[in-house]
Length: 169
Image 1 (cartoon, rainbow, N blue to C red):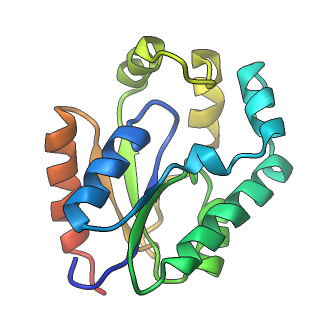
Image 2: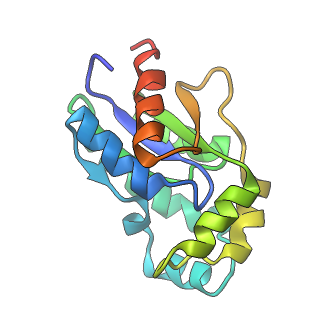
């Protein structure tokens, strides 16, 4: 990518946003922000209890991520956010119009295995179905790229960098 942009690393839980985001940020020489850190305590409590978030739960979270992305405009940055629905991405773009999206994709079985192997994360595996049900892939008019999460984190990051470099500024 020739100019510093904000990249939103998106996808369902367990795709590796928290792993790939920092690797991507390091490769681009920009800061990384963990999207989960923007959740209010009420959201964390709901998800920890196995209750999927509704849109009304997500708006303040998305607004906080959008504010961070807006503050990085022109300087670049990488932030993770599930950004599952087009409406969520539209809300992020309203705050940071030049943001681009890196959609981490993978087969449900692979993602479930990864989630089951995580230690200390608040998101239970039983919420994965609700994540896939809500997921709306990037539309053709959205600036972004989809990358499969097979292979090592370094291989996934390399594919992400290649795909992002092809996006027109």
